[in-house]
Length: 215
Image (cartoon, rainbow, N blue to C red):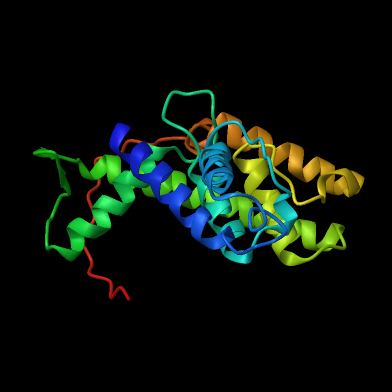
């Protein structure tokens, strides 16, 4: 959790600084020291508070994509923030790296991460992505706005961040309802929501395994 937060924060700050350095609409026209402070603030805020000191709509496309990723990852586990959580993201990344290295189970700090944790992390991420893109798809029907703006609003709602590219005040009644529902899903948590509808059935039947070609 601590290392994941540190890596995310440092990476976000540096990337935003580089992406927005020459953007006159954001930090391009301010002194070097202020560029660093704005990059620091905007690199951390998308996963926590959701405040902004520059106009989000004026940021570069790369910066917007980065902020969407940060909002989707969200805060730490057991915190009041939303998103899939930092530990979930770290487990998925480390599992992929472990697979590339040929590890059957990912190992982190001399501790093996159980397969059930990996599957749970994948489930949280896939459920979250499903609801974000479902909401974005429905918003393309109810709203007259660019795709990038709709996607940004959807990721922001899922992360309950509060950042906006300006679409929120102009949402239709249906669009507002979609955003509200997605905010509740993001706050409750994708896995909690899935478990509330799931009905586990114990069975003594064990089926034979089957290999499936992947990729």
